[in-house]
Image 1 (cartoon, rainbow, N blue to C red):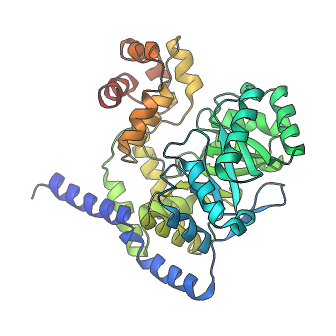
Image 2: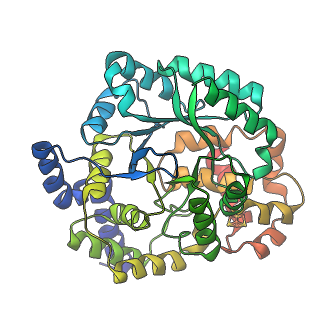
Image 3: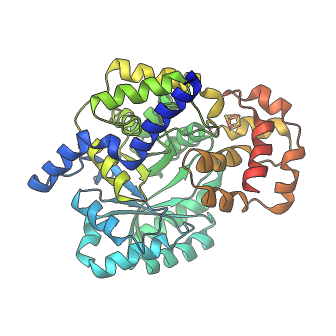
Length: 400
Ligand code: SF4
């Protein structure tokens, strides 16, 4: 068998095992059996200076919760009590949570509930917050985010006043934003604002060691801001297949966990991160991630080095979200980082429908121009050295 075929079959084996959760059967079976016997729960960490402890694993709500109520029930049993959703998530995410709370109202107080508004204007947030409360059958949301900011100036004084009023009315307990673009700059600026309680940002083994990200995290922790990591798998806009990836998967399998679990563990090893928000649309992934959260095994220095080596080898495949760089280079409106993220949803997460739906939200007049733009200057400035022009064309072909 040629080496490339041999590599693919081994790679597919590891991927299949990891995706099915079987790769996590060694550690999880023991931990979850133990959990059933002893009420072992996912550990908790303080959320910034809020005085609230949250589970270190957060259930991302981008799945059909209404018809998967068993997932919420099981998450509660294992102590995954930080639940994340947004007003714009498809499949009735918020309504699914409401369905659960109307059946198990006693669980509401045990859950740290997060939702997000994708309209940051005070009027928009008021409308969306009331709708979220109604959908989720609750009087309050623990942490309310402005959804997916690109720059801190999207949060101005009117935002602060709105948040203070919403808190005074008892509708929210904490306030902040989520971001997967220009995360470090947003975080550094948020730390100076003095009224941001929590941030959910892209953060993973690829980004966590950069000076900029470390400075941003340090500043937020010093300011008492609770941090939730998302996109922790560091999935790329390009499918990868490197020898280091194989070595990683094989090494972690031998130790009893999958590479997906190892990537979570790498983030948890930083105590500054309160929680990881992970999309867990089925029981296998919930089980694998819960087991990883309960596992007290630390990644060794060699494990971490291998992850960093893999990140270096595949840097051209991963968009770091620094959209201010490529955006300013093209000189016209071109949501490059967003398109790279949609490619990631399609290629790394395997969720083509969601990726296409998001891509098609780009206004048609902008979408039509995306493949005709000269991206040469952006490619030159891109710190990841991504093939932006080619990927924008591929996105149009695959998602348009
Ligand atoms: S394409 Fe490059 S410059 Fe643009 S956001 Fe991604 S990594 Fe940054």
